[in-house]
Image (cartoon, rainbow, N blue to C red; front, side):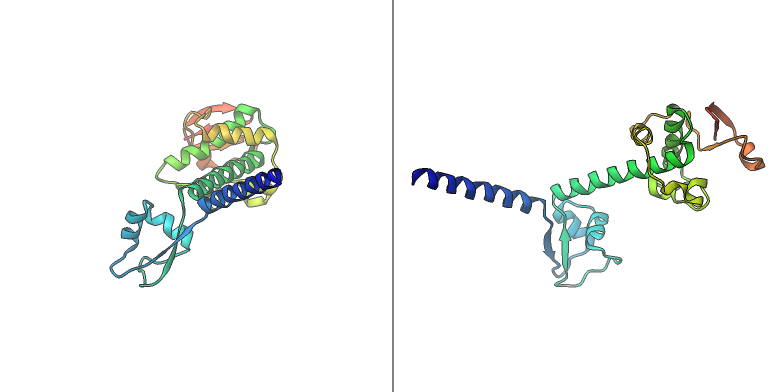
Length: 201
């Protein structure tokens, strides 16, 4: 009888722990009060306006009294950040695979480096997705090769590029000289050549 009671108490404790853990990951709801603005709600909750808009799906800044906003907890924000990071690695890996599948490993990382360099340059979008999907920026995206499965080298190269390794030497462009006679790309300042790609600014 005592053994059964102990087992039952352990099961209840374990279930409560799981429930609390699940609850700690969940979003909570904030009800808009008179005088609230997105900025004030962000200050109250320790978030940014962008985080609240992103989680709630708001496409406006004006709030209505009584409106309910989903507020992400620290744990769910970490999950979102991890998912974004994993998505960025996968996205960059697809580009590397599409543009540099037959290149040496350092050449793969260099292609990833070009994407990361563009993010830092005011002439280009500020995210990996923005750079990758910029119209006519990369041939493999335009012709669909980008959508093919990626190998481990491309995934690893994407991670190395995101972590800051840049064998391209700060290049913003790369091209295969055997495949293009475009005068504009040939007029760029050459930084280095890795494998069959020339990297340029």
